[in-house]
Length: 174
Image (cartoon, rainbow, N blue to C red; front, side, top):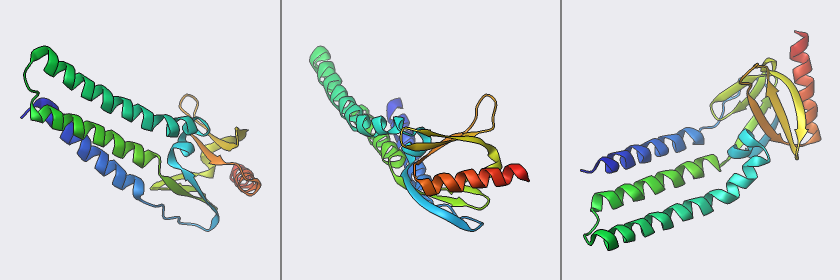
């Protein structure tokens, strides 16, 4: 079996596992103050995620077209047929990229609770945030790290902003 087929199989398995992890919903351990839904890619990148949501299908289409053209050129230049395992590997790699894009483009539920923010299987306490900013229709929560501070974005709503500011102030006083 071709080496690239092994890579394709591993990437496909990894992307399926990642998709299952991304499907998990948070289990808040304290009182829920507000529940909001947001695309995962927007939670990570804010307004920049909008471009990624639109550009990724185009990018995947270009990869598929590029691979087909590459296979045709190989056939035309060398005059021999391409191994079936390399074609299957290409299909697995493109399929795994599509599954990963689907996982990151999924709308998730974010819970604003008394003790912090819950989403998927992640919890971030209010005392981990140092400030908030309004940025392009999103509320940007900036972590306390000096070099690599965690940043998450939530769609702007007055109620969400008030909850976040009051909870951060509450945890600063403690």
